[in-house]
Every structure is written in structure tokens, then in C-alpha cells.
Length: 255
Image (cartoon, helix red, strand yellow):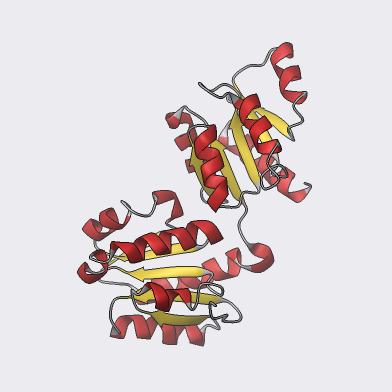
């Protein structure tokens, strides 16, 4: 059984007992944030899996040589929708992103580490993203990667954002992650938006997730067909950043 650690908890992963990692824990404690140092060992990390709310990884050559640990951390971070901060060099960031998707990385700090800046970032994350203030998660499903990436950039500072290019990827994402809202492209190859929505509605685990359709059509027939599928709303793809953020803000304020 995983060991429960109470309160706001930061799990700092380091291959060794580094002085720097211990200094971060001491400074976080002074800010009222509880942190624990764990080694790059799956069984050791598992002891704290229930209580972790943010993961900080001190990258090193040794840690890169235990890919199974990074895979385990990836699964926890995605499953629990946790924040992730990486500390290391550019080459190490590139290495870890081969295992952990870029969308799961909250922030990155290069060495030499500005420890005070790191402490402020961790403290602000914990204040803004834990408990009732936890960021909502929005899943974008669209086969147009350029458009999907644009929407991701618009939303990433306000929401946790997932991306899927088709219905199968969306269902796979939702099997491991929670989502508070799905932005679903109406027209996609193989399985279009209405078909994907039908699949989501037929599953008890995903049927409750609200869906807004993304459509490039403004004609009456297309809009009526979308409304007939009982989404919470529909958005024309011509919507701009400010209008989209306002639409989502209103939705989450008055779901």
C-alpha cells in the first residue's frame, strides 16, 4: 500500500542525496510546503504516490539510465494530472521528453539553478493548483495539428491541456487522465466528431464529460445537427483567443 503523506506535498526525485535537492526541501518547508526527497527507485516513489501533488525531477546521467523510473513517473503524472518541473541541461530535457510528453511538463529550470526562482515557482504552483484552486483540464481532439497546437498555446497558461488527433487517441488519453471539458472537432477522418461523442457517451467513465464541438461550419443545418447531439456548446473555429478564453471561463464558472 502506498504511504499517504498529508497536506500539500512536493516529491523531489534525485538519483542521489544531492545537497541542492535537500536545500530546496528546507526552503520549501520554510514556505509552508512539505516536500520529500526520493531516489530514482520505483518502489521508493510508490510509497508517496498517494500524497504527491507536484513532481520535481533533478535530471542526471544516472537517472537517464533508468528509463523504467521515468516511465513510472510519466504514468503517475498523467494518471493523477500532476505538475512536473524538470531541472537539468537542454540535452537532458530532450531526453526526458522522449518518455514524458511535453504537455505534461509544467516548467523547466536550467543549471546553474536559481534556487530562489524555483522556490517561488513551486510555491505559486501549489497555491494555484491544489485543492479547490486546481487547474481544470481541457482535452482538445482535432486532426488538424496546427490548429490544435494553436489552441493549446492559447489555453496552456490557464488550463491543463491534453491533445488527441482522433477518437482512439482521445479514448486512450481519457483512460489514463481526467478531463473537465473536451473540445471536439466536428469533422475528422475515420470517426467524425458525432461518432466520437457517441462512443464517449456510451462509456460510463467518459459519458459525463462535457463536450463542446469545434466546427468550421456556420450554416444552419450543421449547427442544428451539432445541437441535436446534446453537447454543452459549439464553437466556430474562427473564434479568437480572447473569445475562447471567455467562453471557457464562463462555462467553468457556471457549469
